[in-house]
Image (tube, rainbow, N blue to C red; front, top):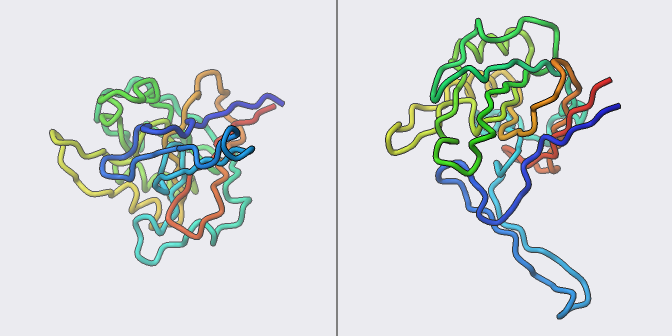
Length: 209
């Protein structure tokens, strides 16, 4: 069974959502000084390839630890959205209507990782998020955010897609990569660290027959 790693490495100084904690991975113990190695990791709960729990945006939303581990392994359908331009809305007509547990948005924006343009990704309209809710889809994307990401030129406009999805107990995975070469349908695993929290980094993996 083929398997593909869809995860961003966690490194010091890696890109983060504007205003989120910076990432650092530093030596705490070294082979030379201590005879073993231990690293000190500092990061936010939405670092790199990660999953959002409903409590991320919803006052009474469930935390990650309230979901069974099986919820983080979904039969997924990939939708090719590489024709979308910077900050272009993704609408319901752009999304599938097939039977699946998750929809994976392949925008191609992972190729801009580390560039200012990475913040100018396509995004889900509230109606598109509602479409996903109505079809029972969790949502994964190769972009930073399912909502528009605020910048100096584009002030914050809220998180309506997050609210629609998370408010209806749908999960969101962001910052996937390496979607090239995947079949249209595959098994998506986004297994988070076991935190009783609003989100966590994941090891995202695709498998298919």
